[in-house]
Image (cartoon, rainbow, N blue to C red; front, side):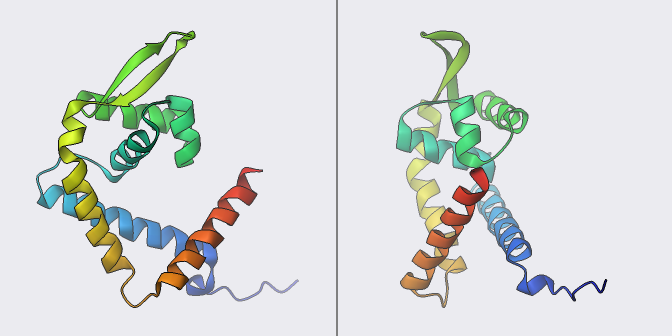
Length: 147
């Protein structure tokens, strides 16, 4: 059987992963330049918590498509830095409710301005319709793979 020729630049998986890594490293550099001790992963958690108000570790892990142990490490580090708080869920003592801490609210405006700038850079030369189509396609892929 002949193996088909593979071009990484024509692979949806390769292009998605490398675009994610480029966005991630750019965010990391921008946070560092602003002297903000925050990782892109922690930023993602904060954005979700600002949207939802609160969430459990399992809810955050599912939303961000990471395993529970990875989410645990991200949350522990964010808690150590004072960006989030964890409190016992009154309906289930084994679960913790995660919320943003006051310190994270101080970063919110600056963080959104910085991340919006990164997104504008990333979308240079891409129409709004193309960006919306990309988001729609990626959401469908994510949904298909969750099934």
